[in-house]
Length: 427
Ligand code: GDP
Ligand code: IMO
Ligand code: MG
Image (tube, rainbow, N blue to C red; front, side):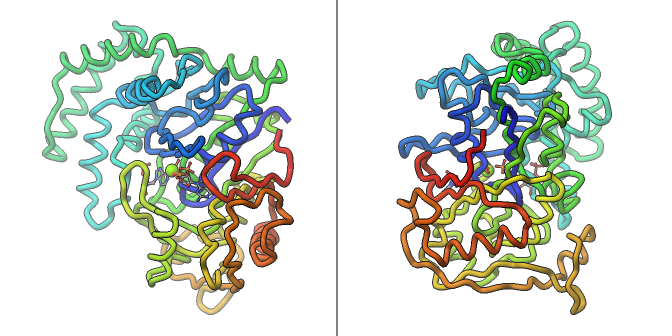
């Protein structure tokens, strides 16, 4: 195995960072291929937590090449802050490579994101307000500024001037927001450009060369299947393609080079932001899970909405990303519960529906069909072999795997690297 994609199977925050960090020990290269600093991946090493937003979760090892591919949107201020924060903690970031083809996220994208969210009123998406959507909008509208442009002061100055004129019109006239001044922004971003220059590379060649040499490449998904622009709960989604297919477009690697796709699944479900969530718990159990799991957003600090694990979602993720194996995380958070429910189907108008509904009207009205499992009421955090998990926990996981039609590959029972049960070698 030389190329593995790790994706989020639900609505994000499944523990992709933990799984990628674990697998990165054996990898040569770790690549982010979509999203930006809307992601928040927490990696815990020896009880010390690192909150990564743009940096790939391979950065904590020495000697791994860490790539931000063409599909990522790069906020220069944010990435430099993250790099400097890592340096202060003694982490070497010199192996970072940023694609010349990645889009640059500018302050007007952040202001546009804020203004659009306010204007949406009750239809707000609940974005992270990091400017991610507007930056991808510009990419698709073909007026985006790429890292290669940022590296060329003349090119950048011309493009910024042109874009800023249009953005100021939009901000002031449509949204009544403050405009930006050109000169200070130009000066600031040309200074950022020089700080970023050592990291910039043609990562498409870098990655394809690495794969041709038989090196091991790990693709780190951000966001998740149901936040995917095409396959998620549109419009309550992000503006990129976090699914496995996004790794090919977002990194410049052909699908034939991919050996395995791993779907990360939290042992229950959470969601931040708006949109339908069939297994959401509005009762005390939702609060119990939120408190047991400290379910508050890494990026925005918002309380995450909590609910039972939904096997219909995992099955859907299995289809759209061609999942080979599941990596279940946070099983330990359920250790104290008396009983646990698993959603195995949806009822709509009294009938079981087969497909994951495209219509949000339908999705918001479906009734989950639950199977109830006895809780195991045992501390699982010390377990390191699958067969040593309590029988009740294995029954729960095996039923999930059966309904989803994807085998179990990893079970995580704590945030630290060693709190991991491996059922199949991944690389
Ligand atoms: P990501 O966005 O998918 O990388 O997930 P987040 O990092 O936003 O959220 C997952 C949280 O769960 C992080 O704080 C991880 O350190 C933590 N975590 C990951 N796996 C486990 C696990 O098996 N058990 C526990 N208790 N925490 C975990
Ligand atoms: P990780 O990688 C959870 C959600 C936001 C919002 C919607 C759109 O940590 O799993 P955006 O700012 O992207 O335009 O917001 O997507 N969202 C996430 N939710 N985890 C994430 O990333 C997310 N990234 C975006 O809350 O509902
Ligand atoms: Mg997260």
